[in-house]
Length: 412
Image 1 (cartoon, rainbow, N blue to C red):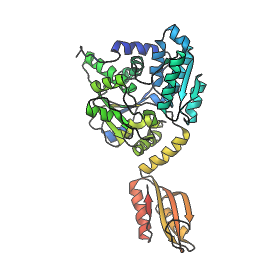
Image 2 (cartoon, rainbow, N blue to C red):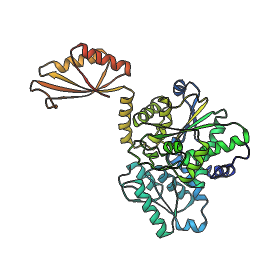
Image 3 (spheres, rainbow, N blue to C red):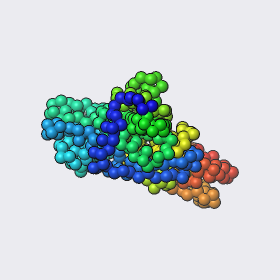
Image 4 (spheres, rainbow, N blue to C red):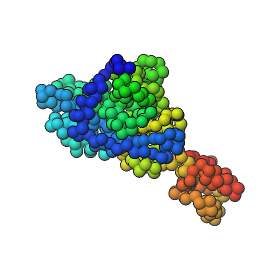
């Protein structure tokens, strides 16, 4: 196995990147999860890149790439395009190295990400309404000014920097059998998988690697099945940090040779995973960083042995978090929305409230209206948002209402 040859950075180059990256990036914690271990049936550890400086692993690849620039290149500055984590990683790395940085971000980017990028010292330019449009503007800026374009994933130096996560995993969990990694363009998973595969060629201990994409933006899932790099039409997803339409060229070549499987998860499952991380692990994880947890919760992956899930980032907009928590509660059937038609006479709301109190369901919100669609003039509609303890409790609540003569229309 020692003659393994892969595209992209060598193991020595990843190890050299680690020495550089260590100047700015933390060795992030590895936390065990009893809850996920019970779901999976084997030990589970969480690699907490959500606790990394700038809130994600991106600082590793960005800093490693910038350290490789010549003095002449540094004098012209760097430029990048991103809606979040890559922007912050490049801005931070450029500040540390004294390099002028210009970051193109789409109009409408989340305010916390915009502010953080500016606070790291970058000149932020809002351009276009998508990351693709911002990327085109950044490339044009590079062509006209001589600034060095820093790609988010498709470059050997970037891949080597992200591969340092793999080296840390091997040191922190020596008996690891499987690593689960989110995939966007493929920078993180190609770096980790390359580091693991090349180390295995020396030690003989092979580690399985599973990638996870959002179902609405999963070009790697398609590409791996076809065996060729395939573009797709990405749809909206809460996991915007990994929402890409095509794999990176070099990244796909590495992933094709080193990754065992790519699975997909939906937004509801990802929202539930964020909620699980908040409640069970006390960790704030963005949607893109939680897809690996979602894959375990939905049993997309099985028989993995000792498992490490990479939590790739924690930069979630507070407003988005509020929405995601509500979605996660609904996905776990702990938040029940229902509409009930009632006769328009006194005491009906009190009667329904009494039934819910008797079964220990907590009413969060109530809307009482005479203007619902299809209501008779003698009817009203009660719209209720109720907090429950899970599927069994939901069934109990609904059955008690039905036993009392009501016909709740449920919207989870």
